[in-house]
Image 1 (cartoon, one colour):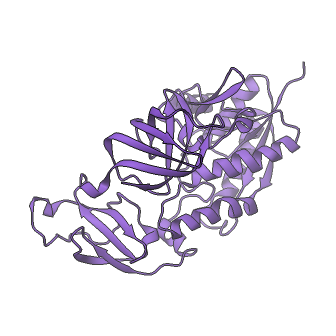
Image 2 (tube, rainbow, N blue to C red; image 1 turned 60 degrees about the vertical axis):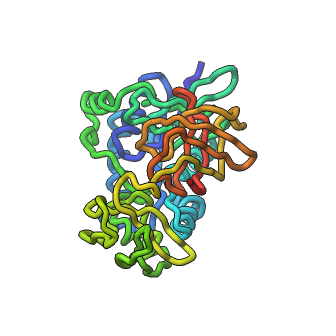
Image 3 (cartoon, one colour; image 1 turned 30 degrees about the vertical axis):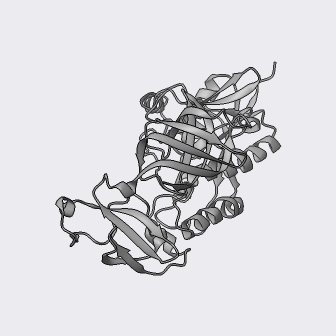
Length: 364
């Protein structure tokens, strides 16, 4: 029987590099594919495409796999970055990794891999796929601290049926140990944390080049003007640092007057940013949300009722009650959730199975 061909997304990072080695060990014929998706200022210190390509090619050499580069810059700009900017301009806080996975890594990349004759694709994500009675389930990674199923919740049956996640069963510490053991040149390379494919850069300065904005008042929950914001797009709910009113005390008195300030609301119509004092202020608590632009892994919504949910990536699953419609769903939380942010994803789980989710439209 001939070996199956797997096209693996190789980024130059340690995760996808170890994934290449694991797949080869499992007997697959592996072709590495390096994606170049951002060109606007690729010579800058923040966008390390050239360095990443050199790392990916060096790893391919050590592991013994072929690698090629492919340019998806126009698809990225059109399908991911344009939407990312639209969301910010509307005052929401999008999650580019969710969109990037759905539109680039598991769409443009998958199509390209199939055109190369691949049987399957693979990435270095921490998640698992399981076939269950002819349906494909997206599962959390065994390493709960690295699980990335939240970012993958928009994947569908066709995509999952073609996808392998070689790192889903192992701990991140083991991945680093394997990289050292097999002598990978990037074994000690830091994990990237910037915007998907754009890299790590001063965020406000970066957005400034693409968004139109105008300053406006920063007000307290009582309507007191505390300062001036630099454009509503540059703030996110729950933000504490970089608001620009450090040291301001509310003149309303009360016990909380020395508490930190948090971004709590954005009034787009009046171009006003509202801030409140204290982490547990009522304006930062929500017991309900509505999500739109929904996507279900199984192809249809789970039954209404009790499930677990995440409203941000770095959050433990919380109890929620689902009520799903044809193009939106609502979640009710028995315990109020902090700083539920429009534009972020609400993702649903049943145990270790990721069911899908949607983009948070509003929360109350």
